[in-house]
Image (cartoon, rainbow, N blue to C red; front, side, top):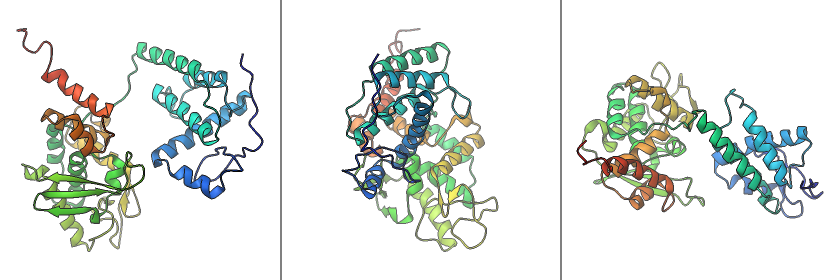
Length: 357
């Protein structure tokens, strides 16, 4: 059995609300430098790592294991613990969440300038757990792609004469057309839209693949149908905002049950932070529209369905991987985009398509 090692004495544990307790070399990083390094990660990654690291530290303390440097046995035992322990919601840990937890531990070792732990046994344990989950009939839950046909049904179910309806139409059509992540959609400002004779250019200041925050511009043309035309839908929402004196700031805003828009004096809507709808708010907008449209398994829909649906619909129209990846701000040659294209090809180039069944 591999012996446990005590962490070097010069690896203090940083604490604070902005980042989790993560060891770093005391003679190399100041608190400010550590904060900047931590904030260099994507926000969702930081939130996930903070959650994962705190759980790992608590388990290591209770199990009497040294959390860092972690031995191969420690990591394998931790995977076994996660497979047998339900989440805070009472559900089994998904293999993906356990894989992320391992990634968090490896990231902490890297930040502490320690050798990468041996994860072979941990990975084998995780592989066995994946097989167990598959045999039990548990599958990875995915948000159904919101294809163009589904999008039209959702838009038709939303009123075109209320602030909430106009906002929700703008969120859905824009999210689909730009293949947007919910964080990107929620972060847009009115000033990020530039209308031209060809359509609308959307400036995305922060994106998952734009790690240095240079910003990217997504060009979206006019649609063939008024109800799903990005330019006309956005202009209708902007006109409603202008009626209330809003011409700058957050594009998508909370709207309360009385149709009051966030940022206007008086009652303000919920599901937002201040004057801006959050990523969770975008999820709520999508789910509610799916329910109103009576889509099958409506509660399974989420904001990711807009991104997946935009890519899937683009692939069905004949666009290639590089074009879709560039438009949706995926990494070049993204396996995710390739997966969307393969799903389309399974039907358009089906082996049983012309055999005469």
